[in-house]
Image 1 (cartoon, one colour):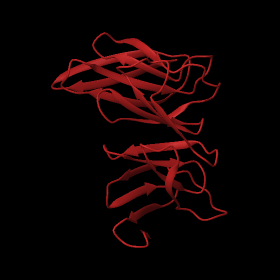
Image 2 (cartoon, rainbow, N blue to C red):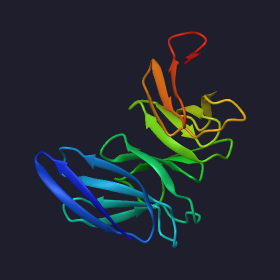
Image 3 (cartoon, rainbow, N blue to C red):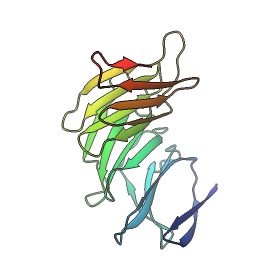
Length: 197
């Protein structure tokens, strides 16, 4: 399988072709003004390949693979760079992982496990201490503190028996917005108790 990705930065266009034996599911870019220009691909983890690969944009080649000993099918569904070197990932194996690309690529710096054994479809950070994750069942959104391993708080955004993954979310210190299969939800953290629309 061949995937083509077109990137542009400061008027320069790069065309990158990636040859992959696994379906590519996620892509995250770190195109800062620093010399380190890269992107990361997340795949389905088939054929015993690491699901996370770091690519050099200018050389159009794989620089390294992140992690080791992933189970077959432990694919990555979402990832977000918090800085040019810090990458958060989540996926089918129920973990949120923090990778520091300056350190060893074999082991993540920290990980948080989804307690209900649900795949994680999306993550977002506030750039400070908080992480929000969206799970694959019942529209569950969890808030995490990076300094702890346990979930701080969770919200069910869809009612049973209707079950929908949280496909996308964005949040700030005052609001969280989440997209489910047939609805959009907004949480207002300024109200007590928290108001869900």
